[in-house]
Amino acid sequence: MIGTLIGTLLFALACATANAATGVALVHGTGKQTDAANDYWQSAMVEGVRGGLTDKQNLLVVNCDFEQYMWDNRAAGCLAQQLTDFINSRNIDRLIVITHSNGGNVMRWILSNPTYDARYPNIIRRIVRIDAIAPSSAGTPLADAVINGNVFESALGWLLGYQNDAVRMQQVSWMATYNQQNLLGTAGRPSLPVSFRDVVGTDVTSGVWNSDSYCGGYAQSVGLEITQNWLDSCSDGFINCSSASAAGSVWFRDTQRTSGGAVLNHNQSRRACFGLESVLANDIKG
Image (cartoon, rainbow, N blue to C red; front, side, top):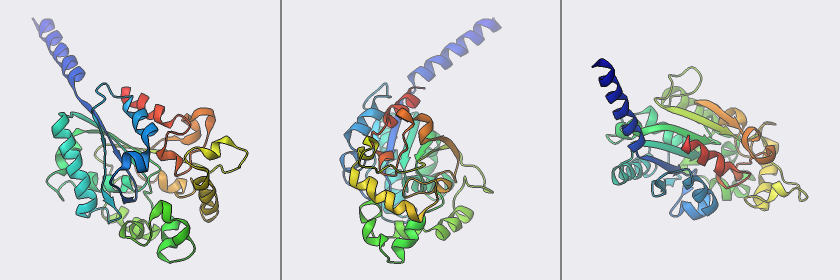
């Protein structure tokens, strides 16, 4: 009798797991996006990630105004609403969120402040993990440079935007304050309620003779090679490795998983470069 009951329970659990609807949300970085699928991630990345899903319709590409402070209704509020609508419309039980750059900060705000918004707890309950690609968890010196109005303001307009609140927020000292007072997951702070895994870009390749320089756009690689001179020796041209690994835990450094051990600059890590999309898709299947 007991054996039969245990077997029945195990079978019911297996069926429930098999029937759980897994969904993936792609969350962009700094910028006001209206077509992030094409303008931010591009089709090869989006469709590559979609390949990891059993139900190919269970993919959300978020479009929000991430030129705002992370807690702003146009940022975290927009993200919360789009995730809520996605969960409800697709009956998502298991949600995997893939963020890039400042998108990790907005997502971490939601995870760290469940009482701030009535929508947050239900979202957090559905999340299996956050895969944070090149997150600016400890900010970036280049945000300081933009706010100070030097050459980076024009040089990094394509990547950061200009003197908006999201850039202001990502100044190193500002992020240190947020990490100590408002956000979870960094050293000395309580852990986040779900797994927050970092993908860390470690270098920039821009040699005209090196084919790796052209993935994602050669001009962007050259620009990030220049800005890397103002960063640590380990950086993706925009985020220091220490910042990208400041919250949660490191899932992998680029060369550990990419095709041919290629590095991922900050632009390439949101694109289908060196098999990154396959790494993400295979992880969804696991």
